[in-house]
Length: 66
Figure 1 (cartoon, rainbow, N blue to C red):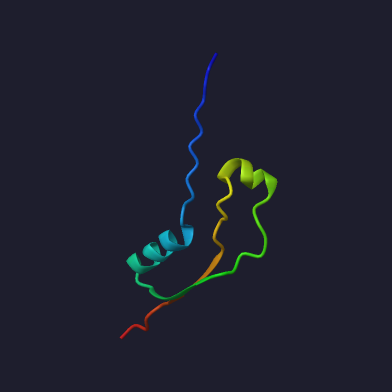
Figure 2: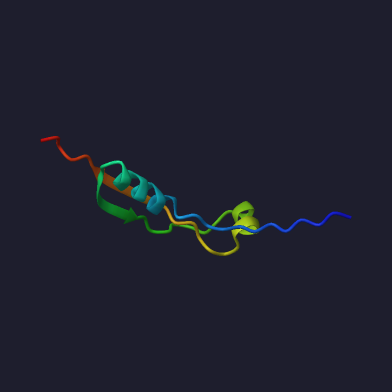
């Protein structure tokens, strides 16, 4: 019998993308975290538990060249 352990981590993609954007020259302006309207679906509950996934909008600015 083969046993598998599933380790599920929530990855803060908005923060990672903002770090990458900064590294290539963008200036982060704002990260808007949207309010939770309803809970996770039953499929998400099985994978992530009761922790809601964050939804956000990121705003970056590309500096003007001098």
